[in-house]
Amino acid sequence: MFKRQGRRWIVLAVLTAVFVILLFQMGWWEAALRTIFSRDDVLYPTASLIALVGEHMKLVALSSGLTVLIGVPLGIWVTRRSGQSFLPIVTDLTSLGQTFPPVAVLALAVPLFGFGLVPTVIALFLYGLLPVVRNTVAGLASVSRETLEVAYGMGMGRLQALMLVELPLAVRVILAGVRISVIINVGTAMIGAVIGAGGLGSPIIAGLVQFNTAYVIEGALPAAVIAILLDRFLGNIEKSLAFSPGERNG
Image (cartoon, rainbow, N blue to C red; front, side):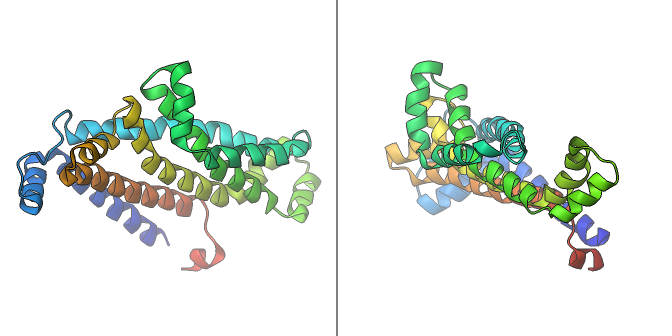
């Protein structure tokens, strides 16, 4: 089991290192894109690829961190006695946040917060909140009443039972929601370029405006790789923290 887990982390580390090295090799990107598209202007001129990736990761990290910091406690609260009556309201509001287009959220946030980072993070936060809250609720609801009764019978209070029993048993489901939310944010963060937040959406938008497919690929391909690497990273964490009986024996 541990050897398999170690191999997963080694493979991910190697792939991440290769990706980072490629980000610095702009000459390779230029040669490859010129071969494919037979034109001179194949690289987005305003910023380097590594700078664009850094801006994109900043957007994803801030919005996803905010989503987890608010979404998980909110999901916990609506499963407690004090918040159970608010569960339908919270579910409806978080569902509305994802069905409401992020571009529309940007349009509403720009007059209040201006252009750039803040309105983009707000839009991504609202868009990624649903899977975190929903999976937190589902994970805690999956803990059997009998298990909780045993915990209470051992003298645990409600907070102790939550921290020592419920959350450890629900962590895999909660992490699955976080994983979905982060991957959603990687793709949705492209819209930040519309209001000057930068990121990998910048060459994509420039490419669409100038009919330059090379620019589009320069933004889209790294974003796709980032999504895959983050998915594997969070998947490895999920498997490291919680194992099913079959995995323990595997």
